Length: 370
Ligand SMILES: [Fe+2]
Ligand SMILES: [Fe+2]
Image 1 (cartoon, rainbow, N blue to C red):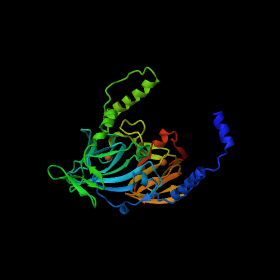
Image 2 (cartoon, rainbow, N blue to C red):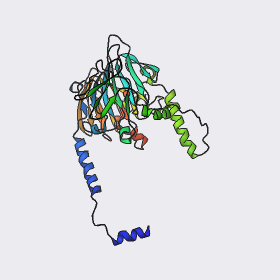
Image 3 (cartoon, rainbow, N blue to C red):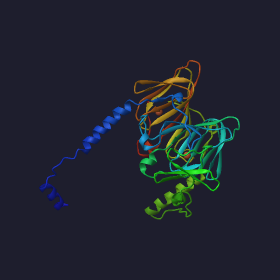
Image 4 (tube, protein in one colour):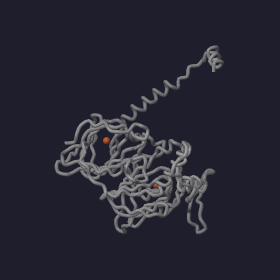
């Protein structure tokens, strides 16, 4: 090291590296840009789209890295809504991202790795990482509709992949310029274009990972050294994912009168379900009243289920009504107001737990609800 120091002293670096200054300026530019992004998304302004995965979906905040903070001032929560048609299902698939769904209307069931989990309006169901999953609407007359988030953070960690096992589309169309791939019955199951191939079905190259994350056979009761504690951690995670419930039933969760207002905490770190990265709760605000006021670093979003009103985020008012989606950026001081003197306002809120995992959790409470 001494020789290295001597050499640096002798040949003083000729060029100054400007990357730190550039980064500081870039972050400040990003902060300014983010401050101009909207906090409220109108249901009517987001179009319904179809895909192999979702029969009909509205995507408020995209989950891909290129979508991060493009249209909303948050980056750890992707927000979408989907409809499963009467008696229908979505396209069966599997991914590393974990996902959480609030059932806005309808009743039906999930099939996750061949196990069935029933749900109904007001429930939250969880899609844990790695599981092969599909949503089924059990109502032959009415659609089922969900508000949901998937975790975009695994993309940044470099461990994300998706396998599209079946399509949700009645008629599978290939993109412009692509050549269809057909199965033995003549059904289109994928396409080829410019040397790239998209094929529905399991990605066999990923099976070793799925097996390793879903079916560890050995069991350590008492780790005999520090290394074994890490080995046991994987076994514990596998066991937890195999055994945890995948649905939190609305009727099983009590309302709590808190300093922030009347809240039903559907998913918390203590809730036994296959989810690590989000919390979820339902909140009601009495006619003409307001919530408490607080702030937290964790990003928060909500879907308005009933009523109309407004939020104040760091002194700025954001109006909302039933069906709108609202985003609260990190550390924004916020409070919810019911603007209707006769009707209760109700919303379902998703809060990112990534922050708490990294030591940026908790709430700074500023004012009590009346
Ligand atoms: Fe999924
Ligand atoms: Fe909050």
